[in-house]
Length: 329
Image (cartoon, rainbow, N blue to C red; front, side, top):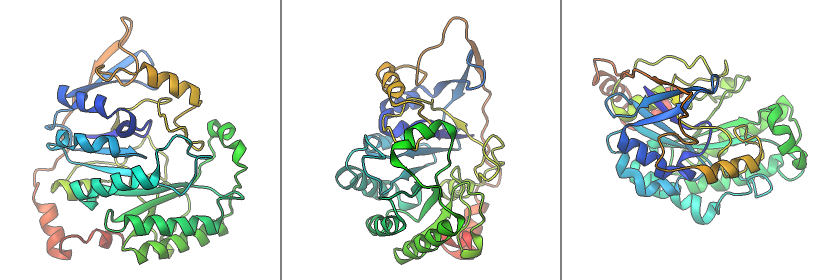
């Protein structure tokens, strides 16, 4: 079983204390998105959790909690873009807080457990092709040695984000413009010892050497954990998504970053209200189990294969250690 923490909100940035408490208690309660009266109890014991994937824009609050993760197989995906506060209004300083935190994280857990995301990409009068290339290069230089790759994608125009995006006068880019930028970003990344892949893009970029990404990445978890995992594609994600199945323990409308492109927050005011209501000692991220709720205890099992040592041994015998990029050739 893989835990996603979380596509729905930034748990490391805003709820790290709650997460550590859940790991200590070895369970979490998650309200169903489909049937609101259903609450599932998810086992978080190391015996059944084969990996945790953290999604965040600011890993700094998690640095002091890394010891709580010692028994787990995990990695971080960190979104770091070149946008200013007109797009990402509530992020702490990227130069003074976020970049140092990423460097400290990579030093503590290894660059193979740190994935950089530069997404979603959009264009307007300020955030031009030249702007993205200039600042992608600056970020790539600062992150060189801290990660192996950068995952990129273009903005998906969900209906729920259109009102928040309206003040930015974003342009819906052409395929030709996307292709030019992708080639440029790939070349810049290569200069700094990185490669790029794409998240759930409908366009196939493999002809220019850019593979599709798996954000919940079976191969990365296998390499980090040194075991083979019997996991299948997540059928609940978009068709273009390469992720394997996971259980998300987050909730929508409770991220405090307030990014205008975010699909997980409907309104900034709602997120602020939910942040204030959060109890770090509660078993559920938001709210509590009501007397009319149906509590379902999920029976969790590990997906580790029996031949737990064959995968890393075979891979290193063929390619040698630290050759993740060869998987994408």
